[in-house]
Amino acid sequence: MEKAINSVLISGAANGIGAACVEKFIEQGCRYIIALDRDEASLKAMQLRYADGDIIFIAIAADLTGQAYFSKLASALEPLTQLEALVLSHGVADENEINERDTFMRVMDVNVNSCQSIIAQCEAKLDKGSAVLFMSSILGKMGNHRNTAYCSSKHAQLGMMKGLAMDWARHGIRVNAILPCYVDTPLLRKELQKQADMVGSTLDQVMRKAKKRIPMRSYVQSSDVADSAYFLCSQQARMITAQSLIIDGGSSCGG
Ligand SMILES: NC(=O)c1ccc[n+]([C@@H]2O[C@H](COP(=O)([O-])OP(=O)(O)OC[C@H]3O[C@@H](n4cnc5c(N)ncnc54)[C@H](O)[C@@H]3O)[C@@H](O)[C@H]2O)c1
Image (cartoon, rainbow, N blue to C red):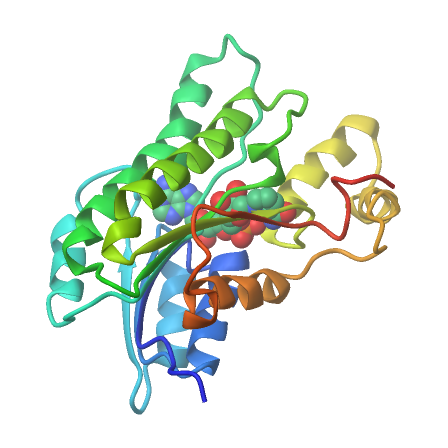
């Protein structure tokens, strides 16, 4: 049987894809989980659910664009000889026009700059066999209306992923990205709700219409993404690095 991943740090752990990753890693036998998110209430609920028996679940509630959490993260990492997996799943998808500098900078700060900070904080604990995973987006490869900030940030994540993969390949540390699309999470529903409001429709109607554009005629579930996230961090993927895996039910190919 394949050796379980023993330790993981997951950002954006409180909701959506990050929360599904927490569940998947625990289900697969991971027993040391560091969960980062600014959603304190959901993180606390998660901690109550999981911090039991032999699971060490360290929840750090923080806005990851700041540095206030650095000392808590250092303490959480301290007992580990190695952090085996680092999954970066926090993110925001605010729309913008190109002249809206505040939104642009904020999205870049959350989606890109904070990834650099987290990775840098973890670097000393990453070693041969460790894996880093970015949760980018299909918009890391494509464009979209009123989305220059988000598209730029998701393209930038792929740049960081590839550069880091080259820097760390010789140390046996792998770096990959997942490019999801149409994953039924709070983030997607928030975006589709905006579209519904714009055309005077309901979220349900917009979701039904959008589903017809997915060739597999089904929304991607967070657990689908978590399954691939675990695989990419596991030793089954030991020769896979600098890659981008699209999970979109076929949407980016055609309809
Ligand atoms: N849902 C989709 O269809 C979809 C598609 C493409 C890419 N993605 C990407 O997948 C990742 C996860 O998305 P999701 O759908 O699970 O979203 P989500 O909104 O359900 O979860 C994102 C989490 O990130 C946290 N977060 C946001 N900003 C933060 C900050 N500054 N500090 C700390 N925590 C912060 C939120 O609190 C939330 O718990 C994101 O990077 C997103 O861009 C999602």
